[in-house]
Image 1 (cartoon, rainbow, N blue to C red):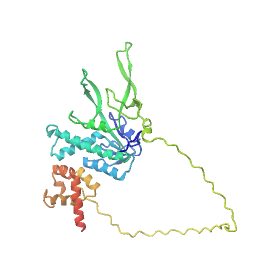
Image 2: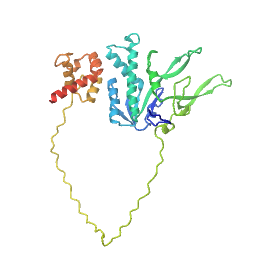
Image 3: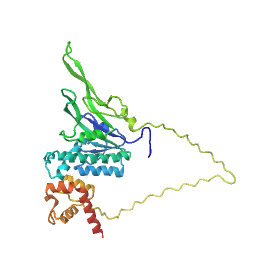
Image 4: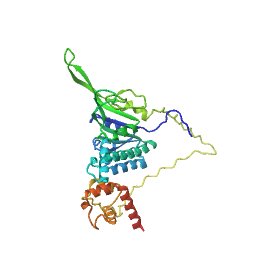
Amino acid sequence: MNISKGPIAKAQKVVVYGPEGIGKSSLAAQFPEPLFIDTEGSTNNMDVARLDKPSSWTMLLQQIEFVKQAMPCKTLVVDTIDWAERLATEFVCSRGNKDSITKFGYGEGYIQLEEEFGKFLNRLTDLIEMGINVVLTAHAKITKFEQPDELGAYDRWELKLGNKTTAKTAALVKEWADMVLFCNYKTMSVATDDKGTKFKGQGGKRVIYTTHHPAWDAKNRFNLPDEMDLNFAHLAHIFSPVQPVTQPAPVVPEPVVPTPEAPATIPTPVQPEQPTVIQPDTTPNFAPDPVDYTGIPQALKDLMIQNNVLPAEIQMATESKGYYAVGTPIANYEEGYINGVLVGAWPQVFAMIQENRSKQAF
């Protein structure tokens, strides 16, 4: 048994949420070497590194697996997590052959959504163990809140996750995170009459709230101030502690004194450069013909491109199971089969395609 004491330096799990346009994506872009999974296309006008917008839950999970294998960044940003929840909901509905998550009955759909979200957070935890920070951005919504031991109710800001009280995705995300930061506009109120009974908003600034309040959820484990300006400089010390930099002393070469044993070196005359003759490129062009994805839904098309799968391979796997007759184009496949089987069970479909490839190799 190993007993350790004191703080342990590790990557951080951060949730940043607030109303639209507050600057969540801009704040996340200042984390160390960020890579965005832009689920809603909000970073198109930002100079950041990003992966393709995921068109399915399966594609989003594969992008996380790519980051785990290639480690191309120091911070992975999922922007936003509530749009990622939509992909998870579509995945659960397609897998259960339902057109709405409310059609499962007895809250079964929300239970499956919670399980999928738990697996998603476990994959992100694997990145944390590898030293990659994870930042989840989310929108905020105002909900009516009633405390069990108090009379009356009041409004408070919440993560925009789970549209029903039975959905527990918001609670999962808050429990998973090391820091939950709430960003909002702080507006100053000034009296407009002598009696001080009428007020109007004036001025204001963008701030970050780091601790719990009756009007919002927030937490941190670094003794941050309760309120800070919306600036990454207040958080930088958590992710990139300043290390003292020591400049090496300049190296002065010692003069070479010729001796009888080691006579002075006579410099070799410099030969004039010969003109470079550029030979014409006679290599034949064996570039593959472009693949025709006409009629293939975007969610399936993205997975095929990401894994270099040809339409003929999808057709071969489908025909081998007897789902459709030989020669049936993918454009004629039913939407339920594409979303529920080809996209929903993509790991099994891709494993079948790889098996067919190995058989053809022999």
